[in-house]
Image (spheres, rainbow, N blue to C red):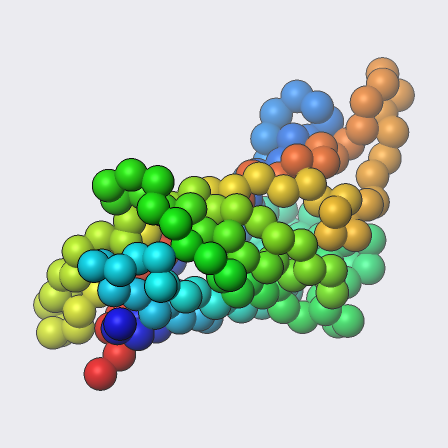
Length: 176
């Protein structure tokens, strides 16, 4: 088993959610850390954990980001981090894994299942560091995590959808 540290400069933790029931708004968190313990010959024994700074949310709209940091949504002063810890890993097919783990948002922990492509084979970067990468996706219901704020639309429906798609594109650096 090798231990890899998350490379936040080359990683993205993104999300999308329906806005006004007509189109998706995309955003990302800009500050994160984590590690992956992995052996390609025995992927079921892998372990991953990550922490994302809630205040680092960026949807490219400053007023919306301020609202998302408020008690209406992430309440970043009270709950500064979103965390994930894997509980089990299973192989779906060559190069694809299912990772089940505990996701904590706003102090509420729920089990989620991530569909993972990778990890890739190790590659050496120009500075001699060994790196691997992976992509993962899942969908959650924001209400399951206490993110219940919404507004009714005059024409019917709501301002913010409940289903959130999470997309992770991650690089890791092998620790010595």
